[in-house]
Length: 265
Image 1 (cartoon, helix red, strand yellow):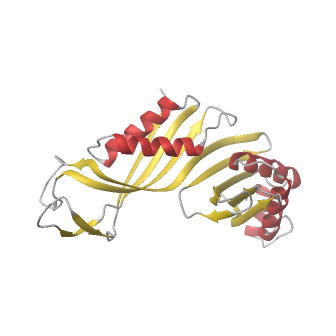
Image 2 (cartoon, helix red, strand yellow; image 1 turned 30 degrees about the horizontal axis):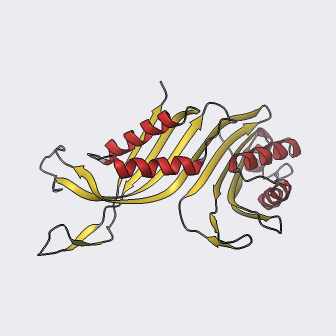
């Protein structure tokens, strides 16, 4: 038997009233044998209400003065485990709610890729940690292909020697220790640099190259994982004067999905 419960989509917006803004969405999940009677007998005497969890997240956010998702989750986890003895295991996740600074006091909400972090903790400390960047939507106009693949009676896809490639990409990494964190923006920029310059023969080929370069660039990273969706647009019209000039439209589902994990040797 396995049990857990918690609170998801807890929005946090902390300002110092002058120029700083820390914005995130947090998920908190707890487990422990002390909560089992709530499931088996309807005894809620040890259950920490999820509304209390939400208020606790906000209270810790008021205390937190940093800008790192990982550090915020670590502080939240320590405080929560100290406060509630029936909690044996705690899983925390957060995603950045990105805002772009327009002036010293003005920010603009950005609907762009964002940093993420995950921690698993117990009373001995942090057991697992993973960071990443989600919702990268990247289009490359030329320099990608997909050809010489397996064909049989079910295959209708034509070979594409040069094609635009539009992907939705999530990127994750694990470092040697919790303290060995890397800049998620620098990781995102390396993904874009690789996609821009690398001539790929498939999305599989591309994600391997991205993972390889991330391990080469960041010595603290032990593992890189990528999850990609092929969102290549569908061709609507082709110019009669120049066949390279085309109009595309949004693709219909289903979408191709590609996953890849590379660990340091």
